[in-house]
Length: 283
Ligand SMILES: Nc1ncnc2c1ncn2[C@@H]1O[C@H](COP(=O)(O)OP(=O)(O)OP(=O)(O)O)[C@@H](O)[C@H]1O
Image (cartoon, rainbow, N blue to C red; front, side):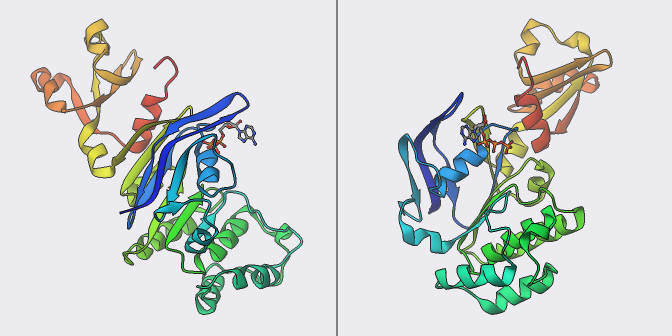
């Protein structure tokens, strides 16, 4: 069962478009959404949240149209930028937000408030970037959503809280009904917690795979530069050459390099390697 399904979704913006997006977000897992700056992550998330209209295609949330008002109840949405009134305090925000959710859990809200060390009576305009992110998380998590959507949740957070947040998200997954979709530039965060990865580039989905598939399918191959010619170059999804040697991203069974013996080093590719090599200029 999938929590979200994008079917051939297209959206044209000035000088940019996302085209024919087919994305599935499986229920009960953490799916990471990666891609370089301006590749269409926020656009995609805004369409899913019905903030932005689609030009073509359709999106299903919990099996129904994403425009269905009732589905919002089940979603905890964390923005990279806080869409809240800067003049408000958390106390005031709560008086507006809590009544909207049938599943609002006041005890949980109080727990998170203490855990995130947020002030109840300070105006949001005086919050730091990290505090705003925590505040967005506080409201998103306090109504016990079945589906948590996060756009760059770890940006602006210090390394300690970032780690705590990731650990916390993993704890939430113990509950089988929970599904998480998070976009990030910090791919090392996903190396730790993600089950699936969707990779978007220039508005197109390059791949959607499980972490296990990625680990099995992608490797970094290192060797001497003179081993690269017109034919061997074709083997790589991305290549970097220096006087010291080459690094190449290889997709497939790396045993084809066995005949090279010790002339070649084969390493597991990280998400950062994959994103870097697949988006290198001239690639
Ligand atoms: N309101 C808008 N109107 C027109 N174009 C926009 C608008 N917002 C974003 N864009 C364009 O859409 C493209 C994709 O932006 P988007 O924010 O979706 O990418 P992103 O992958 O989330 O980037 P980042 O990682 O930098 O946040 C960019 O070229 C941007 O200039």
